[in-house]
Image 1 (cartoon, one colour):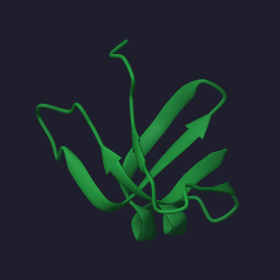
Image 2 (cartoon, helix red, strand yellow):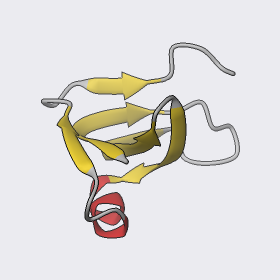
Image 3 (cartoon, one colour):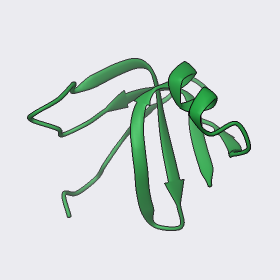
Image 4 (tube, helix red, strand yellow):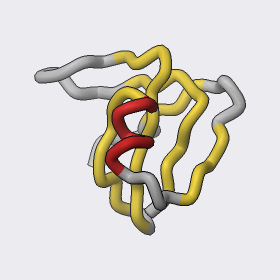
Length: 64
């Protein structure tokens, strides 16, 4: 499991929250497991390898 942290997260989730100022993405291979607030995902996935977004923005480039 890898966790992208330290970035702003933009989602296309019409049913949920579309922007996280301190967002994170948990993923395994090419599959996104979960998106949300960085603190919550760090607590949920304490053994995940951290990928630092260095304050940049992250978002999906296309909808699958």
